[in-house]
Image 1 (cartoon, one colour):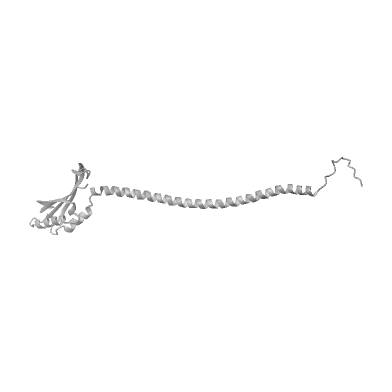
Image 2: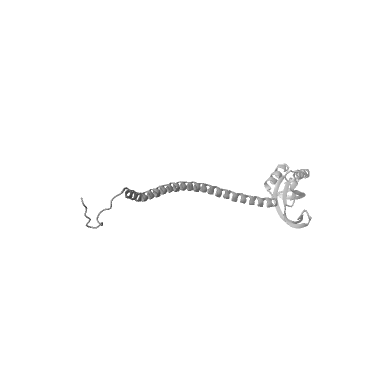
Length: 213
């Protein structure tokens, strides 16, 4: 049987050979394999990204917790510094103030039963004293410091003799563990006064405290 090619080789399909089939299959497989590889890499990257996001979330949570701890620590440190500053200020000036409650309690505990306290007055004035500025040089400087006094008016019946009771009272105050170290002197004077319409014997006890600095 004869085949006549009227189209002169342009219309007859090329013969299919095993090599050509294999070449076609390889050419078709390349995009598929490339796509499969890209898909695999994409999926792997997605898994890695998901894991990294989880790690980042954990780290951020830890940072937030530490941030709160740091803020709390800083707040406590600020309160501590404020308290230390306050204590330092109190320590530096506490000697310039007198706590009168224990003083009055000591007076009440030692007050003679046969007399009465008619008035109690506290006073303060500033005096200038010289203190050593430096131990090495011994140089003295003048400073102004407060000096306090407590004036007690004590009365009794004019017919009575309260000299011993007042002297004992003075001795008790001077030997008191609380007042004794703070007292510079106790000056007592006697006079006749009046309590309402009654004439009474009156003692004025001036308790002078050491200058505080």
